[in-house]
Image 1 (tube, rainbow, N blue to C red):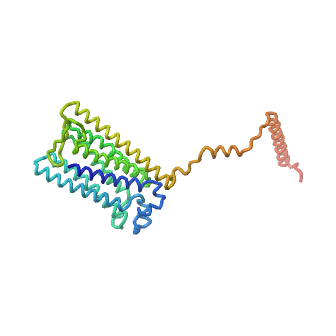
Image 2 (cartoon, helix red, strand yellow):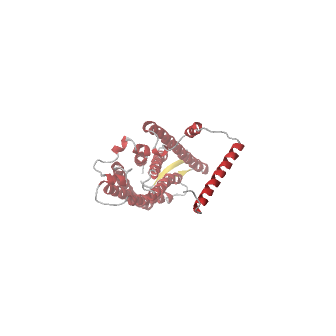
Amino acid sequence: MGFFTYTMAGSGFILIGAWEALTSSNSLRSSPLTSIHAPPQASSSRTKKNPSSSCLTFISISVFSLLLILNSIVSFVDALNSSDKVGSALQLQVLAIGPLFLLCSVTGLLANFTNSIPLPHSMLSLIGLFAFVEEFLLFYLQRKNTSGIENRYFDLLLVPITVCLFSTMMELKSPKSNYPKLARGVGLILQGTWFVQMGLSFYTHLITSGCSLHEKSRGNYTIRCKGHADYHRARAIATLQFNCHLALLVVLIMGAYSVIVKKYGVPRDFTQYRPLGAEMQQFENTQFTLDSDDDVGEEIKEEDNVGKQKVGVVESGMNGYGTH
């Protein structure tokens, strides 16, 4: 596939995931920036139907899906010219993923911004769920060479794909919640950064010494190591790289959240919190009196005597001997 293909794919995932995370955050939804998310020709009913999705999101997914399909077709033709049956079979699996994402984006455009297809938002989430399941199976079952180092990178790629898959499932259960969309955006960002890392590791000799790339066709390649020690060192380096990507993503998310909170304020979910000082001030303003046990006993006796007098008056009135 090449370094350029991996870089472009990773950049596309990063941009789409970042936009998905921004449009689904509660702080930005309550800020003036939300006016650029909704098209002016969209009605209020369609905006309430899918408030966190935008026309730019669906257009970006459509373009990205078309580029994925085009790259798979080119790799399929190259595998046929190289008489690589395994490479051609792999590209057929990739061709099954691209149309699903393209169908999801095109259906989203027609359903949310036109009156052509009146579909519920759950249908879009269901199509996206099928696409992520297909992507998960592609990298989970891709074992051309069991001793290839690329398998370790594919196994680690399953982590962000799983995050996107489960967040889409949660979106089916709670379509009005923004947290599944936010989690899916973070998963797409991590998936994009890992694609860029795979391109750097596979095609720029940044993986480890003693391992080299062997390419049969444009889409069929493997990374072999000379010895057993080189193989384990390469797997350990891949795990360390993924942990660094995950830590970098956490730092970026915390930094972006701090900037957004400083500029737009605290989200609405945390405005109902009341500090402990407010509760203590209420107790400070309350006046307490200290009474002895004897005073309390005398008050109870006086209340009992008053109650007995009232009962006696009621009984005398009922017997007909009351005062007139």
